[in-house]
Amino acid sequence: MINCRAMSFREVDMFVRDALRVNRKTMRLVCGVILLLWTGAVLTSGLAAQTSKKAISRVGPRRPKLVVMLVVDQMRGDYVDKFQGQWTGGLKRLVEEGAWFSDAAYPYAATETCVGHSTISTGALPATHGMVANAWWDRGTQKMVTCTSDPEAKDIGYAGASVKGGDTAWRMEVPAFAEELKFQSGGGTRVVTVSLKARAAITMAGHKADAVTWFDPGAGAWETSSAYPTAAFVEAYAKEHPAKEDYGKTWKLTLPESSYFYAEKATGAVPPKGWELGFPHSLRGKSAGAEPDGAFYEQWQTSPFADTALTKLAETAIDALKLGKGTGTDYLGVSYSSPDYVGHAFGPRSWEIQDVLLRLDQDLGELFAELDRKVGRGNYVVALSADHGVVPAPEDMERTGADAGILHLPEIQERIEKALEPLNFPKPAVARITGSDIYLAPRLYERLKSEAAAMKDVIEAIKSTPGVEGVYRAEQIADRPSTKSPLREAMAASYFAGRSGDLFIVPKPYWLMDSTPIGQARRYGTGHGTPWNYDQHVPVLLMGFGIRPGKYFDASTPADIAPTLAALCGITLATRDGHVLGEALASTSATQPARRPLAANGGSVQP
Ligand SMILES: [Zn+2]
Image (cartoon, rainbow, N blue to C red):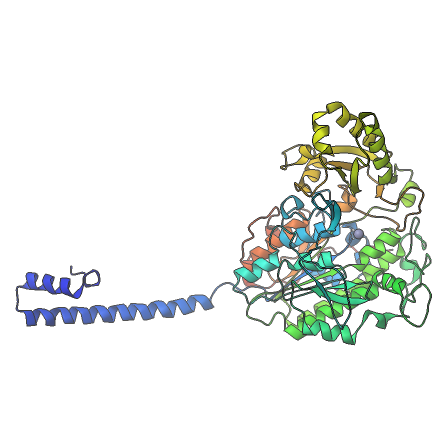
């Protein structure tokens, strides 16, 4: 057969001449006809290919128009079980229309804000994403650094506010889901996040984004950083609704007093300056003067009014940018910080925590109604989780007769210094203790590793401090060893070489790690940051596009959220420690919106 496509005109010419043994003119004519036919065929097949290419690009599976990532800063998993019977808004809708993973828990020890948000955002654990704490000891500069501090960046205040510092996601070692979504889906994605905290807004968005906004309580203003564009809609919102417009308001109980669990005045609570124990709480600062003072912004952040402001800012973004109406899947992240401030002050067994969640339920109800109107029910997918839980105030827990108390970190420091005295190590031997991490003076830990007796003395000194369950050395948890100890695995999942400490304290359950200098009263009620379940157990709720409603008891972690969203959006995450929550994905995959719920979780909890 003649293959004219593989031959030059000259080759065709010769072939035809030899084959047909006819004169040159005839040969030209024959091959001309062949070439004409071939060119026609090529043109026709090319056009056909173009037509089918166009058709393919338009078909593709349906994707969500908008991903809404909600994080409640400090929300224990059991709050959903306990309070859902009183909810009527967005939290109720998430439980009833969504997939509720009731046994979700972080598998790591460093249960703090920056760590949790980075885990939810990337689908990776701190051993992978590197955000090991809200702040850690930087061995290079011998100073504390926050997880978002960036000497190359400059923060920018909205509405003319002057702010200090510079914050970015440069220390987060992997891209966020939102970044991958934008990159892999062709750039049509808009990424917008809001929170009171930089470490929440920034980690939820990633290294680059379209609008990343947080609140500076010192300046009483919204801000972003030079790493992100300034957004006109935030500027307009900041001018129109400054936080101080809530000055003089009063936080009152939402329900009748008889609806509240526990005691009116929470045991062990330490309220913000200017507030007493017990409702109502008036937002008038410390002095109740004509203008807001610093204490007002602390009170505002510790109230449901700040959650409402974040909700309004998120709704402004939906409206101004027409999120969910663009060419790609958009991403909106909202981290509600106030439950954390409320929980630190009043603890988990307080009217305040119950009430701030009732108000958040109402805010989320309004946010979902707005999304239904603007984006369309079934066109968006919502994920809600928390960055960590919280321990009851030690004074409260002690009343049960359980072993509870305060683990004084400065006392550990004193004991280590003392243990090293006979060995003539220069003081201070401890560079810093922050949370569980103990950082020793430069080169000291290397020396201790070669002096077994000294190492033993230091570890014994730590273990002898009241409230200490155990001590780990860096080399016991580096490189994620495979072990049968869940505690050691949890410590290892939090370990990132170079950033984490040399030695690690595990407090006993119900013992609060406290860094208040010895002799001073602590300025907060309670905290978090341990490998115990009250800090690790958080809600994971998914609702909307592609989600099968129901209550799921399967083991899961907040690191599963990003891989599940990636599956819905058809993208790949490079590193992931989490897995796809396939049981909660609708069987028709991403081609159908979620069905109306069955009577999931019908049992309501009465107060
Ligand atoms: Zn906190």
